[in-house]
Image 1 (cartoon, rainbow, N blue to C red):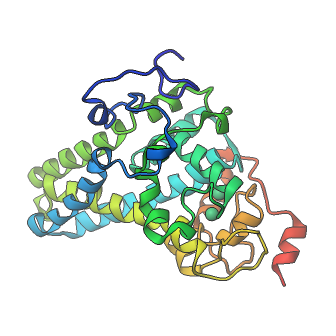
Image 2: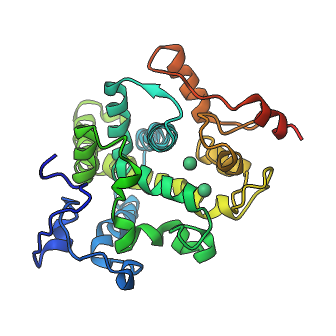
Length: 318
Ligand SMILES: [Zn+2]
Ligand SMILES: [Zn+2]
């Protein structure tokens, strides 16, 4: 475990370049925990995140093709499933079981979404469930829409991983590595898309694409849309929609957010019974992640999906 990011008391390595080095190695420490500044946005570290958005303007330069749009859509679908099925329902809630290779494969796919590593994601999400819509919840919309949507994780406090919440996941060195070097997988995906686009330009000119076009649509546009869709569950799904259960927080059920996020929009259901792999409690509550997980179970890739207890389903009928 030597040299990994996620120690309870990480070694303090100081360097004037530390904020920039942290773009590449999240174990680099820039400051002690300080409640005074922990809540402020760390703009230098946020630069790559802002850069992702600016890079989307590249669409005006690279143009568009069916190939580029299909690539962007497929990467949205695959990575949304990795985030909702694995980062959320598996790593954060342990709602089913799987093998170590499948766990790693979907951790990799999730990591390519530029939502940091699975340990950071799960630690913050478990914290959210423990303190939903209280002062201790970093992304409650009670602190304002932008703070709940994107501001919270750009703060110094939001950058850290509370290892006490994810002790069960720390035993996997491959997951710790993904968390420490959380830019490696996204950069590899970007490079891969550029290379594939360049190859297609030469060998399949009828597809009318090229390296820069596949990079801009497949990586930048797809990732930014995926990011904003994911975090609507923190911002909008605690504001807009219906409350079936009195959960003591502001969580809502919202059908269009559920479609956009493959089932996560049934967020009031989820706050009522977070342990289940299923979040749509009625047949008409479309939950694409649940269907995908059922399919993976049918072919033996995952097992022991935790169902919604009959008593909870009965309550949902009313
Ligand atoms: Zn929530
Ligand atoms: Zn959850």
